[in-house]
Amino acid sequence: MAVAVIDTGVLIGMADIDDEHHDIAMEIVRGIDQGTLPTARVTNYLTSSRA
Image (cartoon, rainbow, N blue to C red):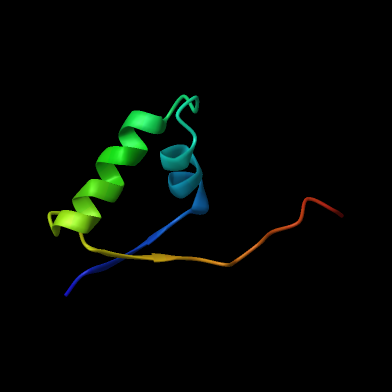
């Protein structure tokens, strides 16, 4: 079974109806839920812009 790592931006875009990427985020989440896209894993990896 394929597994895809998705960024939390997909989840935020799905939840925020005013987000410019809301529609595509909804399509991604629906595809995961319906099984037409791979199982998803959300990463908790964080980066810092500090030098």
